[in-house]
Image (cartoon, rainbow, N blue to C red; front, side):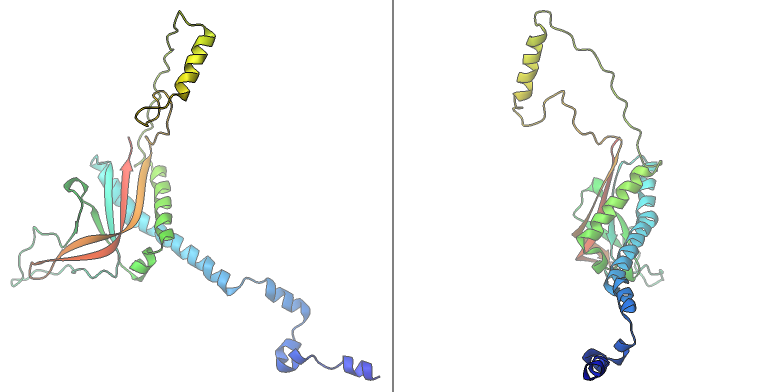
Length: 245
């Protein structure tokens, strides 16, 4: 009798947490199998990043590259300035303001004249520097942009035609084994300049749109309300696009 009464007593954990006693074993197993909050946060973070990167590419990058392609320009450099970089706002002119019509409000210093980047001033809380600082974000931007550009019919250059295969002229004084030995000697002989031997087909990037994205610290020159230049160094996303024809 004492043994049976002792077996009916509640466990120590149930006395501390009464709600635990009302949860059966099957409910505990179901709760364990449900996704954790940490996994839900990771999934949401991945989804939000992917959607935002796609939006930046479709709304800011591809329109500029397509416009450059209409002008016959194969190479495009874009400087995306994060939204938390303090830049002078576009102000309405008045009779007391200086005439700075021939001056750009924001310029990127450090590029050559033929590599003048197109400036994109990002807006919104998601476009702050802290969003673009992780390397995985910039790498994903580069990957998705490359796939989008090579899938676009307006940007993908025509594939180069394959040159006709000309038959090699046979040497009359060399037989089959002589030509084989000569070919083996040419393969083993290294190139004196370190470049691949002529005749060996190398990976060709023609017919593809190449792109690179990097988070770089660049020098920005701005014009204040008095028409004076001011310089600052800020981290920006630099995108280089090259259509190999």
